[in-house]
Length: 254
Ligand SMILES: [Zn+2]
Image (cartoon, rainbow, N blue to C red; front, side):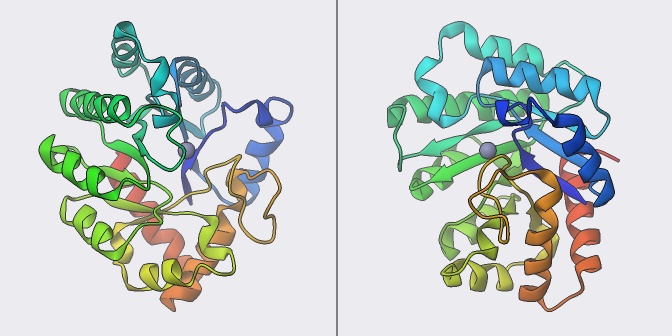
C-alpha cells in the first residue's frame, strides 16, 4: 500500500523514524509521500527521501504557513522540484477555518503553486478546509486540471467532490472515516469511484481508530483501508491494489 500523505519531517518522528519505517515494511506499506509545509520542512523531506527508499517527497508551503512567504520563497520551492524523489507540489491549498494566514495571501500562494505544478508537470497535493467554493474556482481559473493531483483528507460536500473529480483530481481518504459520527463522509465515500481514491494517514495527525488521539504513523493506513473496504463492500486486498494503482499513476512511481 501507499500512504499518500504524511509529514515524516515532523519532530514527532525524530526519535524513532527507523522503527516507524520498519513497521511500514511489516504492514506492506511500500511507499510514503511525505509533504512539506514550508521551506525547511520541504528541505527535510528531500533529505529523508534521499536517506530512505520508502520515502518520496512533496515540496510546498502549507496554507497555514503562507504568511511567511517572501519573494524568494517560491523560487526556493521551484528549485527543490529538480531534486531526486520529488513527486508533487504541496502541500498547498486554502484553509479558511483557522485563517492562520490571510485568505488573500493563501489564494495568491495557491495560485503560485498551481503555476509551479504546471511549469514542472508535477501533480498537486491540496489541503482545503472551509474554502470549497474558492478551491473549485481557483482550480478552474488556473487550469489545474492540466496536472491534476489530490484533494487530501477530503471531508467536503458531494458537489465539491464531483467538481474535483471532473477536473481530474483524486480524493484522499483519511482516518476520519474510522471515527464515529462521520456518517455524511462515509456515505459519500461509499458512492465515489474507487479508481479515484487514495488512502492516507496525514501522520503524525489524525490517527485512525483504534489509535485515535495518539501519534499517527504510516503503518496505520491499514485501518483506513479496512474501513473503506467495509464501506465499498469489497475485500481489503481490492482496496490495497486499487488505491496503490491510483497513487502510482498519479505520482508516477513504481
Ligand atoms: Zn498534511
